[in-house]
Image 1: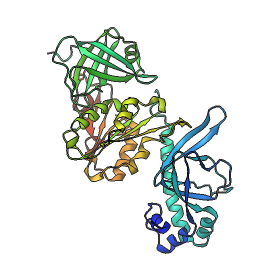
Image 2 (image 1 turned 60 degrees about the horizontal axis):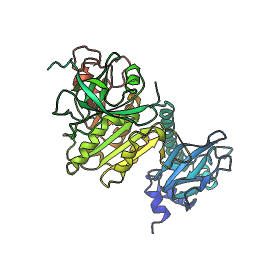
Image 3 (image 1 turned 135 degrees about the vertical axis):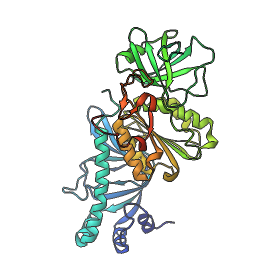
Image 4 (image 1 turned 120 degrees about the horizontal axis):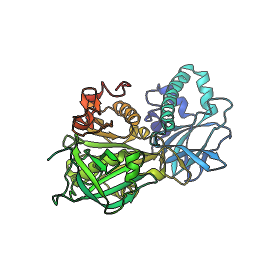
Length: 152
Length: 274
């Protein structure tokens, strides 16, 4: 069976981190499985997790009373999910629902925050990597907003 | 034969694809030899009394008896086309233009990236690749649509997906809870799409902005510029490079394109003045 460390070390988000930093992160991690339809988190709940999706698919949703749940984006194998654990007031801004059986590595947000605070080198590395994800998601969202396939 | 004189074709079948797209199947009234074309080529379709517009051919290149076009009812001519019925007559000039690089792709993985109605000009490529399956590596179709209701050729895609020799990944820009597929722009599918970047030919068709960002992602994955092909769209009128309406820098889209490698048009691509 693959250890958490081995899985993490091979993930693009973690790849290239110093071994001691990987060790620090592994200390905050656990394996979790979500059945289809189960929520990883819901809007306004306390945000204290950072997820690395190993397999499956997760829908990021926002609820509208008129239409019900609207899917904003889906994430899949290898994607990372959730940064509200990093930004006060540490509350989820959206719902995240497992569309299919989803296996994730869940990292404890408080644990990660404390380790990043105590080790600025780790904190900076972590923020650089997260900034890449922010950029990709922001770019994708901007293109999505263009409604490219709508009538001109 | 005068390339400016349309041949008459009769509508054999009208298929409503989505709320604003449709397919017409046409049969020549003038020849029994059928209509041959290469994937990526287009015809000028003349709706008598209304006007003439360029539309890519979206049928099977191996079936010369029937000419197939899919389009969206969006302008004066296409809105009239949307009213066509069986046995109506239309004028056809073509086929025109440079096709997709299906010969150059032999021995390589083939990545097709389509956005919206951009799937229609790539459909002949899919037919060709699948009927010559042994000559190609992996075949991957990444398709982005606006909503699940806007997915073109949905039943056909579902059927193709059941084959084990093609990967079809569909995503939509927006969806509600009952949709179990992907949500997000088509470019987000590229980082993990299953192809070998150093041995892949990519063919992209869709709105120009979508193609621009798709190219950015493909270059990040390591594809070379000469292995990325796009189908360009401009105001084509004559179809043979006489009128100059579709001039694109030193090229004419109708004659030198519509398919270009990114390497050929990189200096023009995304320029606002052109």
